[in-house]
Image 1: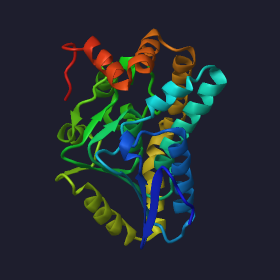
Image 2 (image 1 turned 45 degrees about the vertical axis):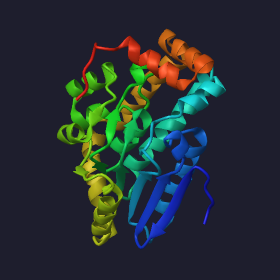
Image 3 (image 1 turned 60 degrees about the horizontal axis):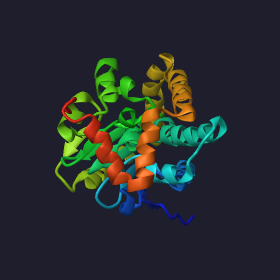
Image 4 (image 1 turned 180 degrees about the horizontal axis):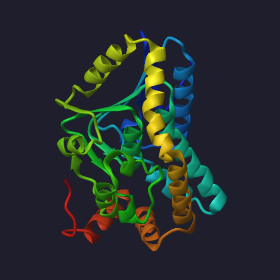
Length: 276
């Protein structure tokens, strides 16, 4: 079995579990982690014994999203560099949507930005009561890499969340909007995800895969893949040029640390928006 550094990969009976395993960084999604997720998905999809794939996070949270500290340190610049970064982000996220096998997200704690998009990409999402969701990217001058939210909850609510950078959406509100499938007691998210996976695994896998393809075809007919690629191109334009807001955010992060940069961002919007 392949050895991983940023994730854990385990198969039990007919279930593959991919665990984001950078708890000291709230499982922030850096390049190495994304590559390993792709490798794990390759293993799960190639394994005829695996019928369901679970994605979860170690430590205090599911994931804080794409790793801004790694981006701060690398200082990416130019169209080619940003195209490589965003394509990896996008393609990794969509592995869970496009996988022929059903995918289940087991979520606790923070589920933000790029990680939020991972949860949206999974077929089923189970969240602990303590889970918190959000898309805060626009607040610091970044775009949305994988613009799935409008397809899941509709354009009006999606624009409200994205334009105002909501990042305190609780589990009950996420359930009401259709962002997640179920809310469970704290600490039960992974066990319930496993129960669901075991139930799905009892069904003929060809029937499950065919049905997933049939459901997703509704979105394919509406042009979801084309629309998401257009949105990705727009995000590439945003990131490769760079907004003044993001430059200011990153400058503060480099000089005073990421916590100070986030405090600066939040202070700019204090009292202007409300979260569900």
